[in-house]
Amino acid sequence: MSRSTSLATSDVALVDLLDRLLGGGVVIAGDITLAVADIDLVHVSLRAMVSSVSKAVAPLDLGEDEPAS
Amino acid sequence: VIDVYAITEDGPATLPAAEGADLRMATADGLAAVWAPAPDAREAPEVTLDAIRRHEAIVEALMADRDLLPLRFGSRVDDASAAERLLHTRHDELARALSRVRGTAEVAVRVVAAPGATADPDRALEAVHRPLVRRARAATCRGGAGNDLLRGAYLVPRDEVTGFAVAVGKLQEACPDLRLLCTGPWPPYSFSD
Image (tube, rainbow over all chains, first blue to last red; front, top):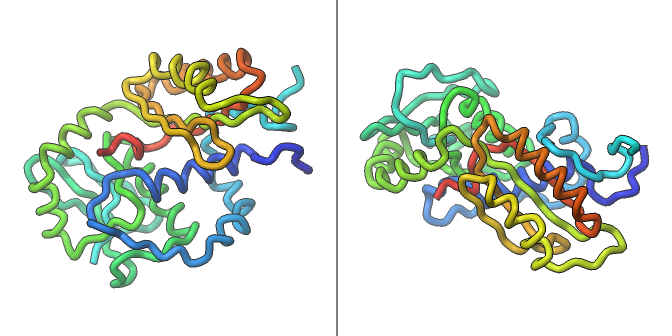
């Protein structure tokens, strides 16, 4: 399937996931320096995440996922 | 070295089996920290998608039957005693945050301009954030990075998450110049401090 929009629902969920786990939550160590092994990994693996992250509660206007109306 | 996943109230609750993690509880002063032995002795784990997904899966498994404050990915301390000390020294702050998130989940709403439309962050704030704040127990927002006009996080009673999503859908219909991207329910990562 081709995507005409830049963000698929699952991609949004992944971005929100990374946002939260790396930037939110209770912080207990002073300065955690996390080694991000390879930032490209995130992009390369986006599709691999599709099946495991299904958190969209309101998939809105996301190209072909939207039912015809 | 132990990985700490969440702060909860101390209780007899059985810990779920999640991701094969050997979950245990450190307790102090009515609070509990859920932890598992770290797979290596590094000061911080390497950030990989698998590790991040695993952290989230464990937190969500815990969240299924209890209120909690999720810890940021990579939260490690030396041992269970260190976790207990943490619960003790930060008790008031943690108890207060825990009481704020009780019975809720977090919903994320990201707003970008619709393709071909012009919109600024103020527009997103007025048209999306303000109406959603009224439906939420608490809310945070920031101007997003990059193309995001708004990154909002809303603390919503769990039984109102669906209604909240419907409200987001209605806002989307009312704002053709904006694109609303809504995900959740999440553990309350944005409401844990």
